[in-house]
Length: 162
Image (cartoon, rainbow, N blue to C red; front, side):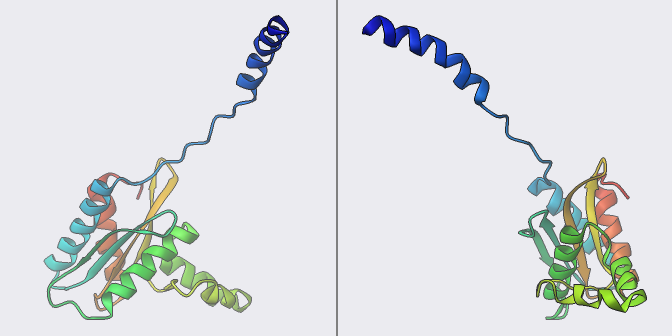
């Protein structure tokens, strides 16, 4: 009996080992890079005289970094976070997404996909080697183009794809 169990175990162990699966790995944005990008974006807007908020969210939409400049408006946190979330969720810049929706009214429902989405200029996807890892959003400058330029400064500060 013991000999049969030992022989059976010896034969089944290689099968069990072969059945194991390697889990996939996914790139992510480390906290240090998220805070560096946010700080660079705040500083870029401050250099132009704008008090903004900057949010960096992970690919899954969770907030990694959030900075609110002194004297920035109370709405800027929600705006920045929503733009960052939208860029991370959709994998594209929010200004381009707004244009896409405006050009095809049938896509207007995209605005209602998730209440956290803000589809205005100022959100950019964060990519390294074309892999989407996060989104960065800026809110509080006079227009979305300026918000996007500050977000771009954040991407450049961490060596992300631009």
